[in-house]
Image (tube, rainbow, N blue to C red):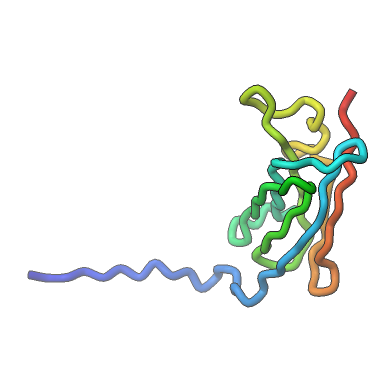
Length: 117
C-alpha cells in the first residue's frame, strides 16, 4: 500500500495577517437598508485577494473582514422578487459607482444610496 500526499499550498496567497475588519451602514433614500448584500471586490481584480460579502442587519449595519488593505469596488443589492433590485442598479456589477479605499486607518464605509429612477 502506498500513500501519495500532494501539497497544494500557494506561496503567493495573501497573508492572513493583512486582513482588515471594516464596518459601515447602508441607507437607501435616507432609511436603513436591511438584508442587503454588500460585496467588496478588489478594484484591480486580484484573484488572490478575492471578494468579501456580508448581509446588513435591521439597522443597515455591517461588519466584515477583507483580505488585504487596498481599493475595492463595492456592490450593493437586495433581492426583489427573486432577482436584482432595479432601484439599486447603479450599485451593482462592474459599473458600480461605489468604492472603498481600505487601509489600517480607513475602516468605516457608510453608503447613502439613492433609488434609481
